[in-house]
Amino acid sequence: MKLEIVTYPDIRLKRKSEKIEVFDEKLHRLLDAMYEKMINTNGIGLAAIQVAHPIRLLVINLPDENDVQKKEDLIEVINPVLSNLEGSTTYQEGCLSVPSFYEDIERSATLTLQYQDRTGQEHTLQADGLFAIALQHEMDHLEGKLFIDKLSYSRRKKFEKEYKKMLKEQKSKK
Ligand code: QAP
Ligand code: CO
Image (cartoon, rainbow, N blue to C red; front, side, top):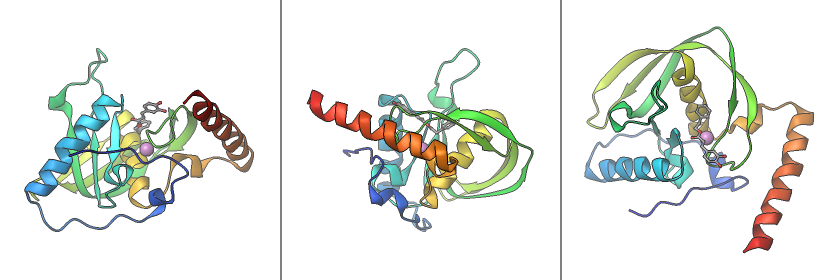
């Protein structure tokens, strides 16, 4: 399965993702291909809408304490529901759909995640640290939102200027 990363300002990123009802081989092939794409593009999290599939699914694979990204730490999250969002934390976020831009974003520090795995089985777990941040970032994708939508007016303007410049420079290199 060939997947391309959809990048800002592509309007396909603004769609609301649909609930997944069928847990079949086709879904498993998409999950496997998303994992490969995420690893090959140096990502730690990826939502299906970022590869042009507007369905409620995301993958997260955080590096361990030695900064190694192990496949056994991969989590496949389908139809997620976040609750009990508490506290506050700030992290310099990036996104495969907004390449080469990073900015401090404030999120809740802890939360409860309810989700289904690739077989459709329900799970509930507690999240904190980078995992809680990644879940909120990816969850926003399912609602058609990006981390840059959280920037103040002045920071957003600065972003638009820098991003346009970056795209222009990329074009002239090709
Ligand atoms: C979302 O982000 C996230 O600009 C995942 O050139 C963000 O994997 C989770 C990436 C912050 C937790 C904290 C970005 C790769 C990857 C780039 C990513 C780039 C190459 C971003
Ligand atoms: Co993202």
